[in-house]
Structures are given as structure tokens and as C-alpha cells.
Image 1 (cartoon, rainbow, N blue to C red):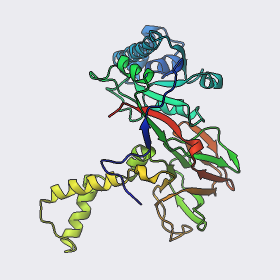
Image 2 (cartoon, rainbow, N blue to C red; image 1 turned 90 degrees about the horizontal axis):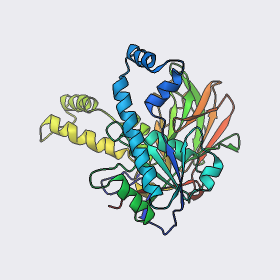
Image 3 (cartoon, rainbow, N blue to C red; image 1 turned 90 degrees about the vertical axis):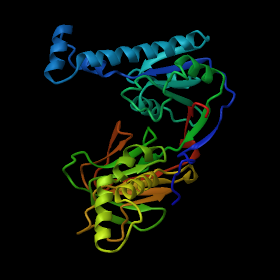
Image 4 (cartoon, helix red, strand yellow; image 1 turned 120 degrees about the horizontal axis):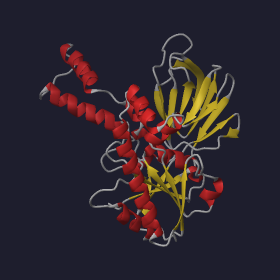
Length: 357
């Protein structure tokens, strides 16, 4: 397994292709304030503010971020219109297949969650999806282009119109249950497990034509190179406290010795270990999996690895309440006896973009 370093990326990258941009589907996220207003639609504004205060929410803060988001969306919208582009402005609840098929480019205005929602609706590998982060103070937006003093929203639109962005072909996972493909593709990950976090998940798995292995656990994550920097990264990572404890035990047992301060060694090893869990671009055509909190007794096969990399994976459910959740947004039933297949292919990739380096 090749690990990522500072010069590798979890996708294939190329310079912009010549394409005419005449129509753009602009997908704006639902702000937290919008969500709360829908939730408490029966309240007038003063009662609504009081309700938010009673549940510990900051109305003024929500309003400020909502207005900043709306200003950013409006700037994207107006920048496109001023360049003669037809714009379809939608939210995730109102987007249609025709909106997607009739547009040259899909722009997600929001954060990574909105980008994932947009990407899940795009099944073609040649449909360009671009994310613009509208709340950089609260959202890191790893999948999005974040406006800065150097790169304003207007200049980002210029990059799009002039085909000067770096195009990125991100791997996605195709999931089928009992031979029927799901209507969405996993850009980050697919989670398999019981929806009740207190319950043990039970299933069997086989990777790349090996043998069926049984496992009981707290769920399993199947993820891409893109997903290796997201939820999977946080499952895999170790804290400096954990590394420090391991090294202190190793040092006290006489198994190892250090030529430098222990704290310095801990920081170095922690950084190296955590960065090693990010898949590199050279692993195109492979996905990874991690089994959470595997119970290593009873029915669990003693040879099963907690994590691995493969090109094809099959999982057979042995619990009635198992589910498959794609990118944290779409949930599918996966009851006892069902069999899920996870595969990759060029036809499943997502075309995205970043600013030129």
C-alpha cells in the first residue's frame, strides 16, 4: 500500500479542457437559519428568536452567517449573469434531472455537505461540478474553492469561463444491493452498520476474490481517496496522547530508545502516522475500508484485518437492522441475507476542479 506524501493527491488532475459555458446550475445550500425557520414555521419572528434562545442557539450569529451566505450566492449569480450565462438557481430539494442534464456546469454554493448533495445527483463522469465555499469562517470546504483576497468570487468565475481551472477526476464507489445499483455514487464513503450506535453490527465480507470472513463490530466504512481525508481520516487517526502512551510503554520496557526529546518524537510519529492514512493518487482504481471497534472474539474470524485496500468488495448482512448510508445523506435498507457489492470504474468518476497552482 503506497501512502500519500506532500506531493500526492487522491485523484487524477489535468489542465482545463475547452468547453463552452452557456448555462450553469447554481445549487445553494439551505442555511442553518433557513432550516430552523422551516422547523418553527408556526412562530412569528420575535417568537422564533425567543425559541432559538431557549434551545441555546445564537440567532444573531445564525442571521449573520445566513446573510453572508446569501451575499456570496448573489455575487456568484450576478457574476455569471454579467458574463451572459443563463443561471438556474436551485436548492437541493428542488433540483431535477433535467436541470442537471441541460446545464454545462453545476456550481455548489455552500460547504462540503452541499457539494456532496450536488455530486450525488450527477452520475456522468463528464459533467463538471464546482464547489464555492460561501462560509469559509465556519466551513473548511475541502471539496470547494474558497474565495480569498487574491481570488475573489468574480475572479473564480473568470477561471471557470476561461477554462483555466485544474480539472480533477475524483474516484467514486458504485454500490449495488442484491444486484440492483443504488441511484447515487459515493464520493467520500459508504457506511455499513446498524443505525442504532449502541447495537453490534454483524456481517460477512470478501475482498478481491478472497474468502468470506465474519465480523462483529460498530460498523464499517468503505471509502475513496477523497474520503480518506474526511470521516475515515478521523476514524483512523491517533492522538498525540495515544502515541505518547505507546512510546512511554515501549521505552520503559527497554524495547526502544530515543535520541531526542520524547515530546518531539511523539509529534513527528503522530504526524507521520496520520498522514499515512491519506490515500495517494497512485492508488487510482482502489478503495479502502476500515472496520470500527471490531469484536475480536466469538464469531469474528481471527484472520480478518481491521482495514485494507481492494478493487472490489462484497458484504453480506447478518443483522436485520443493518443499513448502508452513502456520504452521510442517503440511507438504504440492508437486512439479513442481503449482499452489497462495492466497485470502482472510470464511468463512476466525478469531474471537479480547483484553482491552478
